[in-house]
Amino acid sequence: MIPEAAKPVYLVDPYSDPVVVRIEGRASFLNSACLRDFVAQMLKSGKNRFAVDFLRCTSMDSTFLGVLAGFALELRKCNPKGSLVLTRMGQRNLELVRNLGLHKLLTVDISEAGSGGESCNTPLVCGDRDELENARLVLEAHESLVEADEANRGKFQDVLVFMKNRVEQG
Picture 1 (tube, rainbow, N blue to C red):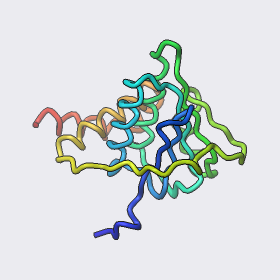
Picture 2 (cartoon, one colour):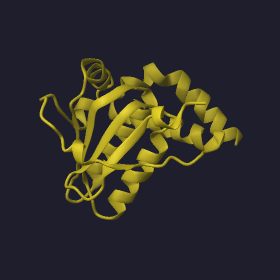
Picture 3 (cartoon, rainbow, N blue to C red):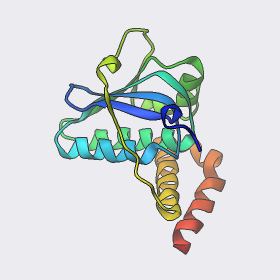
Picture 4 (cartoon, rainbow, N blue to C red):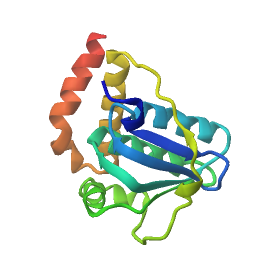
């Protein structure tokens, strides 16, 4: 069991423009659902500009990156078109974003300037999800990565097949 204080978390400022999300710790399939739900809620309320502060993000997995790709794709459909800016990324996280072609979908601000992440003090609460809900999230995220860049299909073919089978089995 991970101590509560050591759990990765997203801190948000839902009232700022852009809406700012600060990642604390590891961004992964274990905690991406609450971020996806938060962004969906913000979109419904008319917010379509987001900044994600990576200064304290220790690592991220492909599901989290797929959730980001899904946001960016969704923001392109907004009228007016929305924006997603990733700020204060470390070299490794920046490489991951570029290797998956996400830099073509969203803005990566490589300056060291603050993103407003300091104003984030509301933690997102991730509810428990069952195995099928997690499988759907992972599948949807990886489909978004392929939609973002067709070159990702080969990288994630096994994950896509496995998760489709899992979701179809219910």
